[in-house]
Image (cartoon, rainbow, N blue to C red; front, side, top):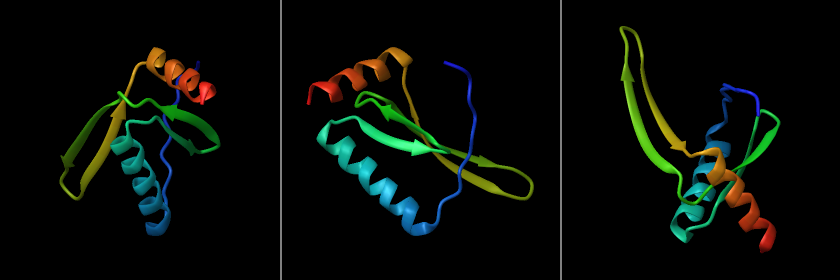
Length: 83
């Protein structure tokens, strides 16, 4: 799989809907399917979750991050196929 680093901007309603779906998946212990910039992928249920805060001279940023190994993602795809 090739490296990728994209950023996509969403409207407030779109972002809120994605956060709701993510929260529902996290609370139910299920993987989360999402499409970003034309690529669909699965965030496994055991992804590491962190919140970052960055501050520069003229702006601040908050990032909600989910991180997982590719092996975990493949396992999540297999789990979904069984359902």
